[in-house]
Amino acid sequence: MTAPLRIACLGAGYFSQFHIDGWRRIPGTTLVGVADTTLSKAAATGAPAFDSFDALLATKPDIIDIILPPPGHADAIRSALAAKPRAIICQKPFCTSLEQTREITALAMAAKIPLIVHENFRFQPWYRAIKQALDAGRIGTPLQATFRLRPGDGQGPHAYLARQPYFQQMPRFLIHETGVHWIDTFRYLFGNPSHVYADLRRVNPVISGEDAGFVTFDHPNGLRALFDANRHLDHAADNPRRTMGEALIEGTDGTLDLAGDGAVWHRAFGSQTRSEILPPDTHAGFGGDYTRALQNHVVSALLTGSVLENQAHDYLRVIYIEQAVYLSAATGRKLEI
Image (cartoon, rainbow, N blue to C red; front, side, top):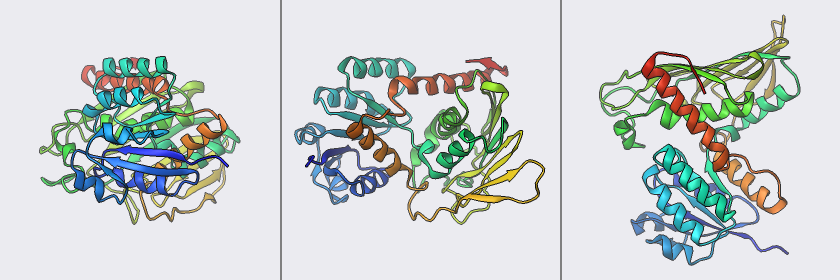
């Protein structure tokens, strides 16, 4: 009988709750500890608690899950690589600069240790269902795609303070923190874009970065995608943070709609009726249980040898695209990536 994979988590901040909950529900794993500089926060998770990363690494984990803000990523990954785990997962935004990301990625590749960026939106059940429908040819040749980001959490002087207060100080916010999810998801659904055009703005004066804008992407085979984002506005959903908005993907033979409840609908070209291909989401947590889905994907890959998604060397392209978005917004030009 195979021993459970030993999981160690570094960081006990706001989002760690979703990581820890996910690990506890994945068969074939055991959570050996959580480390945080504030020991009481680590202890509050209910897992074995450590106040230093070195002490956590002494538990000899198979998978190290780094749940820190970007300034802590590089040093944590260097220490994790020295411990020689079977895999490392690191939260996004990944590291603090393109140069740092390249350095850390090179170190992981030289060590032959998989380094997976925790870019989890592509693992949301509705995007997996949309991908299956696209691959099955349900809408023919896709020509247009739009995602309307409408979480409704960006208004007023107290925006983001209750949950992730550092959002207010980020000099690059909408794309670097949030829009990057759809850069990666669009890549997953439609392939890598060749060109980008961006028009970004700040609506809430109390924050440092941008919180609204339009970004268009040129994808293979003539598909054009629009990321239409405004964190001040909402959409029809009991929980605006479930999908954070609505999507419409249009092809020569039909359309796919993503609703705010997580349901995905198909309409054949020329028809006035829709059929449901994925029912509304009922998961009580965040994002259709996408954190657990990514973690389960990593576990499955380690146990079966299947291909890992979102390894750092591939995720570099997401960072290149993000940089092109900001350069396009600054220059007012459509750019080749």
